[in-house]
Length: 323
Image (tube, rainbow, N blue to C red; front, side, top):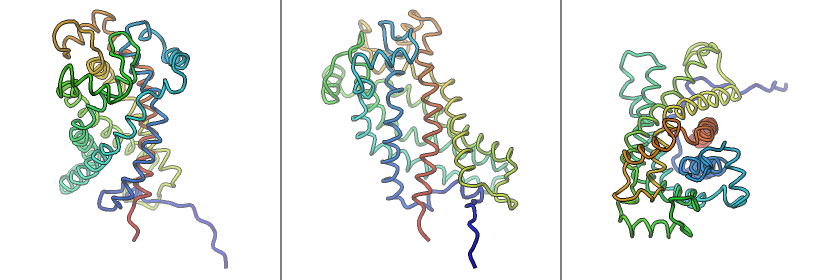
């Protein structure tokens, strides 16, 4: 007798795979491949956003599409992928550090809050938020110098930026003028702002996902109704889009200051600082200047939130230990 094909269904508990269930080698290898591909797809928007935030020659007043076309005219396809090779290769160790710290800290928080009398949605949201903050703090020491180098490669040719022929020359010029400290321009601002922003993203993602599941009449570990693979991916993608959009609105002003601080060199006398950068931006464009590049960043973070979380959850499913 033939068995009828059945739709694959999963309990809601299966939508969040914890660290101890993962094959760590597969997790990092698959993650390296899929996240590099994802970053490649989104890199052109990062180039457009960065050049709009830094530009002093009219680019900052154009729409993102106009800036994208201008970059294509002047530099072709390589122009919109400036800095990608450096970012992709150098990000691999940082990605291992980021994913490991995220999963370990989330697992620890879930265990520490297990006996507390709180709603499951609140508990998961807190665990994800704390994990996002811890992961960002751990990774700042690695990613800030990489950010400085990659963003300088992105803005080659703009007023106020030094011309360089590659990452090694960027590093050499920074070290010659400012020493090792120059590689950490914007570190304090990044650590103090991006850690809460990361906590906001992961907390918003977990909360949004829980709200969506409940609106669809699913309850964690209760009842017979369980989501299909398609439903699961759709819900996670929607929650990721929401988290990215919320985060971009709140963090764009800080990102604009940080980007200019890391790449601009024509500040006159004295060392560049957060206050000096903010004052120059305010004098030039008013409060609107803090949202330079908002359109590309909003789209980038919303799309990043969607693709990142779907990719991330896929990596975890492909990396589950075989029984």
